[in-house]
Amino acid sequence: MLLVMVTWLLSISSSQAPASAAPVDVSTVKVGPPATVTELDLGKLKGELREIGWSPDGAQLYVQTADGDPRSARRRHYLVPTAGGAATAIDTQPEWATAYWEFKSDRTAPGIGSLMIDLRQTLEKVKIGTGSGRPGEMGIPEGISVDKIAEGQHENVARFTLLGETISEFVNEVPIPGLMFSWGPSGSGTIAYTDRETGHLLLLDQHKHKQTVAGIKDALLPAWSIDGTRLAWVQKAGRKKYTLFTAPVFLAR
Image 1 (cartoon, rainbow, N blue to C red):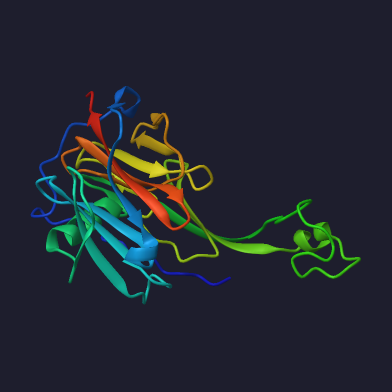
Image 2 (cartoon, rainbow, N blue to C red; image 1 turned 45 degrees about the vertical axis):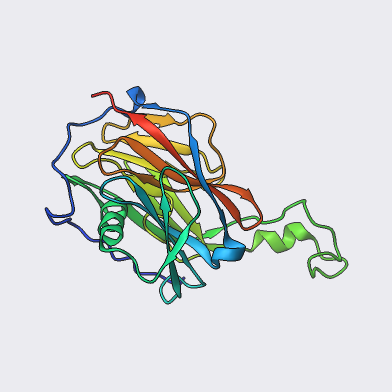
């Protein structure tokens, strides 16, 4: 099996992380109605979505796209006003966006060094396409059972887990920390993440309280504002098209 090394920052400098908040029970958190920020057409922006980040004042969102292998991809940079408006191309990633991504995608919970994400990479047997194909289709010769072919298939699977919950899963892909999760405010012990299969948006805290945010599916790149008052994410809207949303978050401590 091909192992992919993932490097995480294990700490955030005091200039990047705000003062620690009190622990949060996510089962009591209220997420308000989502508001559309803009439509992202990857046919025009080019590449695949890789990053979303909040500006320190919450007035802008940074969006990054990239081509191909994330380890060597060409990256493109955009800014979007959170009040709404089109994505504007910029030359380089702002320093605040770099700092935000380090905070968002760190292996260790901001402000709680003992709360850490695990990564496990395995080679797993996966039955693909069983019962869904017919001989002669998908390059399968006549007389060869799809079931027989599927029995021997193995996949490289990388899973990020936190407190026993899978918060990211990559199958035959380079694992990207932060693509499917975002830490909450420093010291809160919270994380937002999306389910690979359904794209549901979920919240989890250090005491294993969990909440599925209602009405959201096909979501990716959750981004929790550093002050904890808003969530952003993208939602699949069509072929190469995504809608960028934000929603208010009301933390009950």
